[in-house]
Image (tube, rainbow, N blue to C red):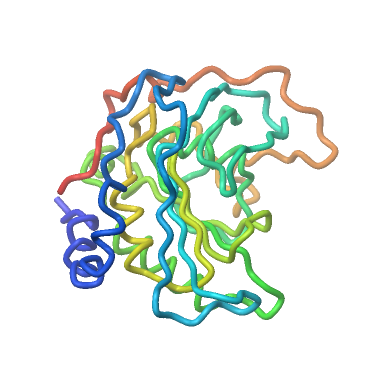
Length: 262
């Protein structure tokens, strides 16, 4: 079986992570998955703010990383496709969403938030970015490095035709910062390139959603015309939210759920 990218990632960033280990202590100590669509958290944990020794990205005044965990998610209902949702955090860290979700890959087109929040519910990490007019080659290169280095979940790899890992990379023009990442109940935002802290966030918060599944039965691909993605401009919403797919069972699934290997 392919060696876990999460194990490789820990070795690659061990030295850099040591420098931020003290302020990040506790970021990986999220509670185990809770009952489906429920949260025991009433208030988020104190945010961790880092100031890495790196230049700010264009349009930013300082290099700043903010990591927030323990964010309560009071509701996570399946809504009719194309129903817009306003999220309490930016990027979203959970909430109501559409019945389908995005296939696990890097996207050129923007994945609707209502799709990728469903990915978060499955324990995925979303790597998001907002590009200035001048482009963001440095940002996408760094995010792609993080994605590929972490792209091996042994449990996902046991599925025939399944993804290597639950990771989505997408542009997101609604972000407040040029770089962001999201997990269920957790967010990461950055105004500069700091691969060590982003890789740490991915490893600490992976597979922490209330539905721990790698299944892709209802996944869509917004980059492909035939990828099944909803066309919401001028279209009527679905009559109702689709039922959960066979892969979606509370607390996990029998076809590949679970946290990544060490």
